[in-house]
Amino acid sequence: MVSDTSGDASDRKNLLLLIQLRWIAAIGQLATIWFVHAVLAIALPLAEMLAVVAFLVGLNLVSLLRYRHRDRVTNTELFLELLLDVGALTVQLSLSGGALNPFISLFLLQVILGAILLEAWSVWTLVAITSTCFVGLTAFHRDINMPHSHVGGFWNLHIQGMFICFLLSACLLVAFITRITANLRRRDARLAELRQQSAEEEHVVRMGLLASGAAHELGTPLSTLSVILNDWEKMPALTRDGELAQDLADMQAQLARCKAIVTGILLSSGEARGEGTIRTGVRAFLDETVADWQALRAPAAFAYDNGFAPDEPVISDLALKQVIVNVLDNALEASPDWVGVVARRQGATLCLEVTDRGPGFPADIAAAPGKPYRSTKGRAGAGLGLFLVVNVLRRLGGALDIAAPAGGGAQVRLTLPLAGLSGGRP
Image (tube, rainbow, N blue to C red; front, side, top):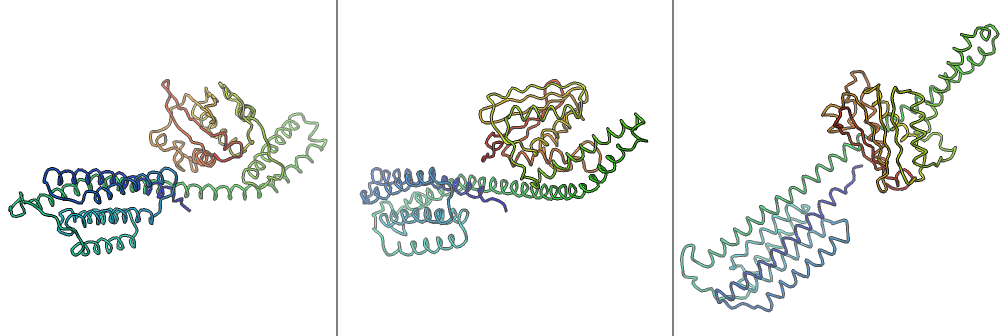
């Protein structure tokens, strides 16, 4: 399932936009009341109208506290926010001419915002309420004496008020709907990213099941080979031949390695967790992993700097060990002459940098590492190593970055939160 956290974040941003719009409404109402009362000399019920502005300010302060202290904003809450704005506007209009007030069309602004932010039932409810308010204002309102009402054309005060209302609504709609749609686009992009991650994780699970099944199937033939080799080592005709004896010893060593690989696959897939959890330190874990890889691969030149300090207790994770081995293998394949590894601690994070002097990563892989089956090796099945690395790191709360050092080659940087390595939540 895809998480809905991105939708919650979008709703919180939309709530913040409504709060900003309400500040503009409160300031605009104060400016309009002052202009009408002081400049146009039109008598207004100042106490009641200023009380409505004070209500909007108080509502905004409460909304800001709610925005800062709670993560989730529901459709019902956004609906109530808009409903309170409609109520405040209705009271102001009833105190200043009712339906004849040129600012009556601000109801439409509330409906448009609701159509963008709310679910269908909420929008139609808002339409019904604003329509009822409009009709009610034709009968229940306080009349105001409009001077120069006989003047025609644009100089009529009512026409000027309608123009100001139109201009204000148009500017606010452009400014805020642009930002709201940007929030929605970011939410959709985040949802698409989460769906992609879910698909990749499902792919990893299927690969893990296949690997676990293959490991089980390989157990029987490996055991058979082990029995046959043990019998051969006891045969006098073979033990007298030193070259054959050495070949048998090499075969036993390779067979033991195959058994260790199968055991590691089963451990990583959770098949053999009963042996107990192995706890170690970050420095010891890195030293052991690098030493095992170096002994097995025998690189021509290898630089290793473990500067992780102070040390931190962690759980020895075979999956993470395989991640590091995969990155080192890729570096060695690209640069057989030299591979460098640097480990550092940055606060509560382990940073591991693997550098090589090879040709570097193509631009498409460097820009989006971890996509399956994207490789320059030109063989079937290639391109899964980096894909598995990225998914294991994601499970542990870490990340992978690819850089191109100034001297050429490539640098793969693994960052891992220590909380994830110690068995806690990343």
